[in-house]
Length: 451
Image (tube, one colour):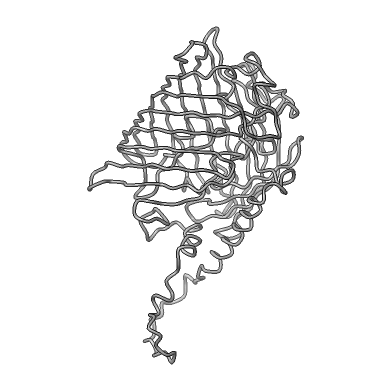
């Protein structure tokens, strides 16, 4: 997982600059098109239309004013589609999007195939495919009773720095009712980062590897009155290969099976997990007040050589406090992740939780720190310049550690900075964060909210 680091890579990543400029244009376009109305102004009836002196050219006024696909896409980007079916821009069951699959993947065109509530039933079919500018590939498919709100596209986690499975549980929070579906996912990410295992690894040890994995599972979920429960079980097939980033050596040449468990073998895992999420945020996609809490417990069992077997417990809390008005918000997040290998076993390096990148400890490189256990804290002060533009001050602290005795506030890595977010009432669509740590200043351009 690699950060968008403009200061070091700007000459080699023109697409990032283009995205920033595009985001600015998108924001300014949306702002210019949004009408300003006074809530106290009386309603005025439209006067009768006056005949136009313009000669009839055979083209109606309606057809002249109807926006094209690009303009509709720009408008949809910063709006909630409250008058549509919730899917935004689409053509039948196909919905094109642009996403960032994982840190370092770069932008990727993604195509959804989405058929909810087929024939008036609750049966849903979804599939998606994406291919990024740095050859990151992502494919998935689901069939059954899926979690979704209205006709909106289902939300799935694609990044490798998100802590499985709690990230997926949080993404479905707020989807009502009972869900039962089969899911398949395949990822091929050729430029993943590794610096070693432990809290004291050196930035000079930066290595590269290719991660391929396929996940086949059944998922059952139920939501009622702010509380959702998700159970899932299946098979995870993994493969570690030679990385394609020529700037760094391959993991297999810099590390061995002792310093990077799993580098010489790629087992299949049986996994099972159970988790819950309490949702009390006013608007999960753009929260101003409230709280949310999650917990998940998982078991991973290596079915090949019985070398890697471990349990994972993840705890997370998020709190949002409005300061007299929704324009000023204090936001906090705390995350704890504990991987406990069985006696004589270990956790493969590529499945261990990580700090660093665009989501956790943003002042450091992607996957800068990884170990069996992780603690992460963040606080943000958010100020809305307008309902569509938000500024943020960011402070983060966290660490990875091998044993339970590391759960304390000693030896924390810290970073701080600021950001700007473009959003609609229900969702943060784009954010740009500039964050500094002892290892430099990093710039992150991300689609979606911070937390």
